[in-house]
Image (tube, rainbow over all chains, first blue to last red):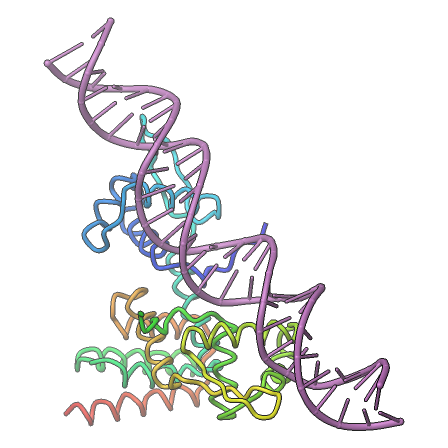
Length: 129
Length: 129
DNA sequence: TGATTAAAACTACCTTGGTAATACTACCCG
DNA sequence: CGGGTAGTATTACCAAGGTAGTTTTAATCA
């Protein structure tokens, strides 16, 4: 079975993973409670998705009484990196600078964020030295 | 009809758009010639995809003799921005800095690229001032 | 004990990207 | 004229994300 490349996770799957990363462990009801206000889904939708994700090895569960407690089986770091990397690759032919450049013109970026970015670059440079 | 959010473009669709952006106009054969060496597809696959993309208003075509000449109907800028933005949003809750930070740790970034990035930030700051 | 309820299991459906074989069509060349 | 050839058109599949109704099961409470 293919380890299924992380970069093609759908929005709902990603959102569910985020909840799990946040909580460590969560029941369907927990996940549902978090997601429901954001997007109006049925409880069973979340449950089904979780089951599908388990089949794909993205999450796993254990039983606690009659309920299932799910945990993410993939690391946030890995997924974020994988998704981000894939995007830069497919959209900007690998040029991080191009990617950031587009991002900078596409959104309001606060002064604080710019400062933060600057520091990031400086750190990276230092490490590269 | 929904203007179909650009951020859900698949890899093949994106690649095809890139060819069209590059050429301005291209026949199926043209697109095929470019893509074939990268991924081993059938000619009809490309043709079908183009037709599907036309239905989705991503491209349009005119007839030149017996062949179709396709043109992108969406701007590269728009798509890149949209895809990039969506990613930052869904993965990093809108924090560009977080996004870049992950990208920096996920790939080899050349000194030149770092310099380029630094300049980008400085420019953005100047503009924001 | 019997009814309510909460949970999971099962089933089903739609959309879209991706992939391609096959069928049709018109044109050009010998 | 007749057949190759270069195109498009048609049709079909599969996988995966997303969505959710319906059914079963088990526990809890009155």
